[in-house]
Amino acid sequence: MELLKKERDVVIPGDIIVESMEFLPGRNTFRENEAILSKRVGLVSINGRAISVVPLSGAYIPREGDMVIGKVTDIQNNGWVVDVHAPSDAFLPLAGVKEYIDTRKTSLNRYYDVGDIIYAKVNGLQGTSIYLSMQDIKARKFHGGRLVRISPTKVPRLIGKQGSMINIIKDGTGCKINAGQNGLIWLEGEGMEKCIEVIGLIEREAAAEGLTDKISAMLGVTIDKSQESQEVLE
Image 1 (cartoon, one colour):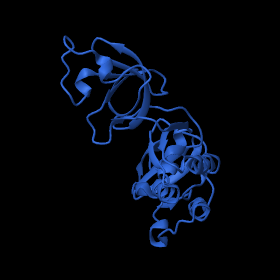
Image 2 (cartoon, helix red, strand yellow):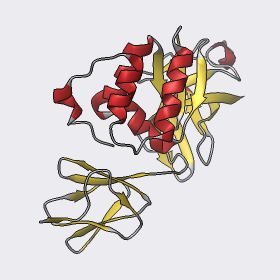
Image 3 (tube, one colour):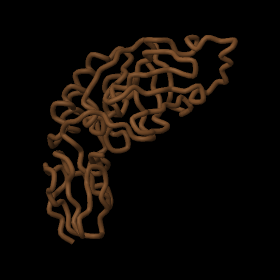
């Protein structure tokens, strides 16, 4: 086994990260013979046996199972059109909501109206079509609060391994945070301004060493050093 690149090393398309069948290609990587190579410009992420590359920039490309934040832009007879900042709009069908809706008796805008902000799950992809569901336990319609936007490629760093980074921010600011994989972040609480400052720092310095320590000190939060070594980019 020859690991040619370390965790968080910068790679470009075609760079060989490891030459070994003991590792598996993850996101933005591919196998060629026994080697795993990068598809994108980004940072190496090693999670167990999986080798991935976290892009340094790029638009949101939806994946089934993603939680996204979107804005309802249109109401149709069988559901809602939602802007999730992807290459195409998403669609929330009637079958994707928890309640049974009799459209002969009830207007759909009683549930979700144009302009509403929702937290939904990507339930399916078909060609360029994106289908959403509100049946996940985390799905909800937001009331109040504030939206901020970051690069979708920086969302894994904002969340951290097993939610480590986002929990530090919540503890240090008292702000409620819901992060969409599409780069939209919903905030609510008295600590919103501080939270926005921290999120901006993460977007600017996502690849920097010691970022967790820097943010912990900034917020006055003590971190568990035994868990810090487990934090990796996803």
